[in-house]
Image 1 (tube, one colour):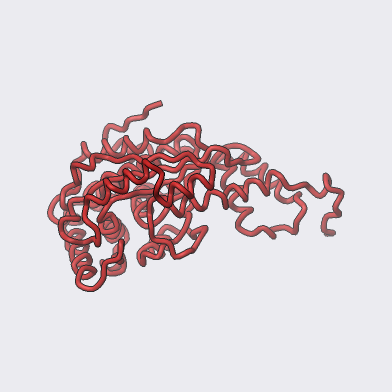
Image 2: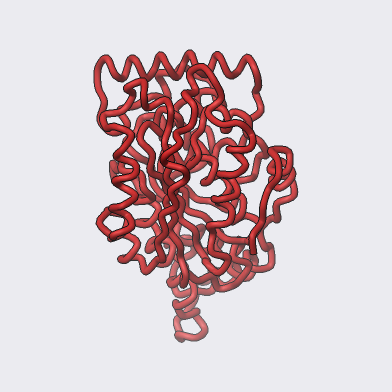
Length: 340
């Protein structure tokens, strides 16, 4: 079913009115966990993951049977300032690679048994250069947000969000700097592999752009509109839709995290249904996870984007669910439980 937001205020309302976790399913999972044939807590974070999954799927035991991976793609006007190692036309070229199954995320999605979809959004129409104007007006932002919302499969039981867009780490750094402060250099990294003077240029652009836009607003959703890209807006829309569909989410890397952070800053708790799949090698990502109060499931030095870390984490979440559902209880196995 299509759900269309009509304004930024409607998005704020959706965040305020978002459903919470199922305490029933979470309670049943916690109760069963205590009876399984293992010392209490011996599976560590896997136990937390299974309880989280049950709470947001509203079913016990939880299952991962129909995961979905979506990569949203957009082009950025700021790319014309020379902040990336690659030209803007690479975005469309990589979308074609996704569509023919040639990218890393295609292989990782297959390995995880996930459906995969790439959603390019007006690649022929880059956002405005946010160094001196908002990246999007409200109409363009809402359009992209709705594309993200309506791309989510209502039958999926675990949603993985990723992105493709030359210069989008510049956008992510600007969003994070505007949302959380600190120094611009704390949020700017090499992205696709820039060094030296290009890093300095990128840092200066981020710092000056944030100062310019914060003179106009401090609202997190409006910051995303002004400094984000169409793919960031779409990812925020998909995460919001997943919350209302009671679908757990795996957030990929730095760029997805920046889009998600705007939701959390707009209404704390908006990311309770989401886990961060991995911490990337982009320097600002670790800082962002600390600001969000989240720890990554994986730390493999990846910095590819395109939902690669999220797709890789699907089987970890599935393993947590399968252990919980499939293990025997002490009573069923005839194993003596610990003594009091």
